[in-house]
Length: 275
Image 1: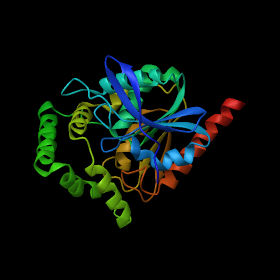
Image 2: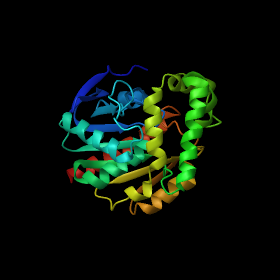
Image 3: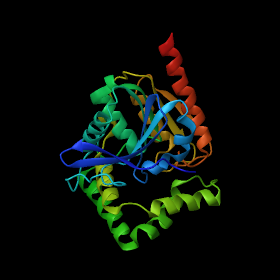
């Protein structure tokens, strides 16, 4: 499945964000997770571009985006980059979809700039480890980085990626996910992982200013349904859905199930706005 060509946006200070976009109309912005990048959203570019301007960014340190200057950035640094990015594209209001650690970025953006959103979707939301003791967080970082340094990106992807999919995933889907993960930008991955370990989703919760939806995968080990339920409970009024038969690769595993759910949600917002 083809993805749009890569573009770059100047976000100031000598920094740029690489991104892909297809379609026109109301902007629909996708924020990938730890193992993602702008190519992650191939099924979403195809499905939603007839009605929306579909945009997928590469987080700082991913794709051809300028890395963050800090060795150990925090979620606020990514929110700042996202804000500069949508400013550079002159997006006044838009629908925002975050996946995995991208949900923490999305929630934090909503908390700070909710007036700019038309809706928010948190796909396979995670809590982060910010409430864990400092030594436990430091050990999580040491362990993950030691494993990555020892194995290298390709072997790391082969060892870890299959566990991120449903045990019911077709072998060709598993292989596609492994091949995708093997092309990671290691320094950018490490920076975003450190931000995830320090993150606290519950600290980003704010009263909803726009319609919002949260989605869980029935077979997700990284964001299991019980974790997503806790986040759901924190966001009073958020819509909650469980997709059967997928793990943590929501854009890849049975993408029609997620796309149909998201399409119905967005159509509902458009209908409400027209009334």
